[in-house]
Length: 393
Image (tube, rainbow, N blue to C red; front, side, top):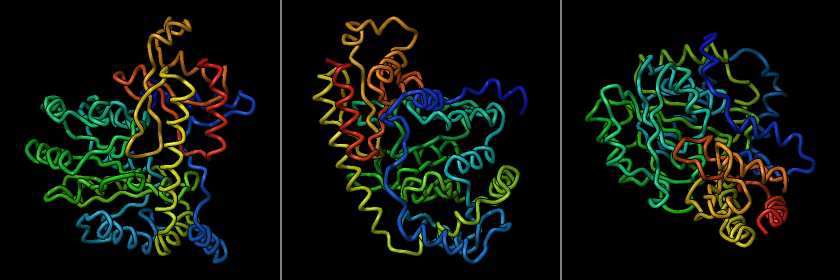
């Protein structure tokens, strides 16, 4: 790709991460890394892989047993009509899965409709495929969901795909079944692909998680993308997966997987087998605790900031995506820079040691918002809130 890489932005999350390493005793609410330990089943699977000396090359698309378990999970849990284990490609985490899927489908100049806000690497991956992300705002008044009329108007003859992330990072908004049914009708009527990023499928606090690929006639034009990072608290282990029914697109994605990773770490794949074969109790336990942490943080934020930062607790994911009160920012002289959200974030980090990410990094319509991660343990969340109190006094 050479010089073209110079046109791809580095995620602001990386810039914030670098800033946080210069802060003494930081509160790391900037990165979406849950504080839970991995379930014992995942650890046992990895131990087995080591003890049995599974430290050599593996099939590029993943261990047969793991692909079998994933296919069964997609059929039973997600309702996706996966007919064969051959549909499955194991990826080096969810990000790699997104990369494989998008580079298999997109051609230079294709447009991809994406939500605003959206996790910055997803947008960069669209661009890395020489395609064009077209961000359509999700509306806070709709629970950070699309106005579907607005979405439909954004479709042009150049549109190749719609990128769905539900529940979404950073807003936590979740599309309803009715939303997805209408998007499915748009995709079928306009012959569009759908990339369905379901990283937070197990962090939905009410209602049902619906995979758009489970809807009639949609699996053949949808690539569902998953990660084990959030479900099993193994962000550093890097295991994700995608499913592709279309043989031609699957062959392309397999090449991308081969030439970017050869194969996913053998020990990580054995851990994933252990997790999928074992009991799934941890998923509900994690979700229950994440809801407690969400509510704790939002209540504390209301008390500490007195309305300077505001928003309603999201129904999904584990972030607080909150709006900056411009009047408060002006009273502090924080409205003078090019970006309000960047200026306020840097002010919070400097004066309270609390990591957070500016809304502008997720899309132009998200300027004026800030993202905090609420998946850290209760002690860190309460410590961060108290540390911010002086900033908002």
